[in-house]
Image (cartoon, rainbow, N blue to C red):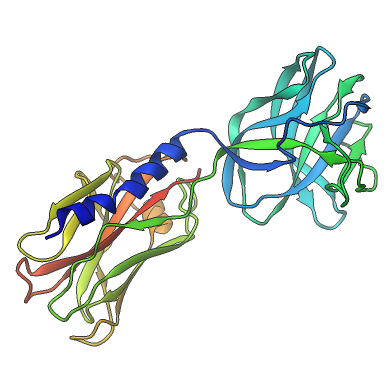
Length: 320
């Protein structure tokens, strides 16, 4: 067995874990040190429209501002598709501005969950004389924005223009997509089971994240198992499979691969969110956004040295 090959395949998942543990910039606009130093804000609520590029949990918001010392607030609001304006408050982050023009902001009391591809509004409850968070005018119009002068009860018609290139940062947990690692064993029929996933892994959602192992031997009993402890690289008996998740592990619901006996057309599939939501007493429960998990598929393969085989493995990070 080529141990170095398997160890090298674990480097990427470990790097993903390190990145996910830090507060990352999930979405930003005009994230540069340049700014338009000729525009200040008045006593109003300024709302900037944005589309979340990925599903994420936002814990901090920042704008490029200064020029005054005052208590202000940054919010995230949902979008009213019927009116094209802000709809409802999702989270607030009060902060005190300092006079130096720089990136300033605050953390939310609890992370705000954003769905990839959905529209939201960054709302700034500004005070008179505050430096506007604007980049230099551009060739193309900046983002859509609007103003409320009655504390969010109503909003003016949204507009956009080349001289309103708003600047902001949204920071939080924006994990990379699930990443496959390790090497699948070769079964007695020459199959190499491969892990993949679809949807969003969540610590609270009742469904919506499916683990799949394809190219499994047909008509075999199998299951997924996972760990909260990290990656592993141990030979699985005398066969070609490798145990790629570190003990202790949690077994999931038993499954049948379907397909034809002796063929590599079997599939194991499990909605992990549904399994988590419906199964009490799971290893490490209750789960929380930001946790990393490592999963692998096991299935029967009677002619093999250990009478079972393993797929490769998959690393993924939970959102709230």
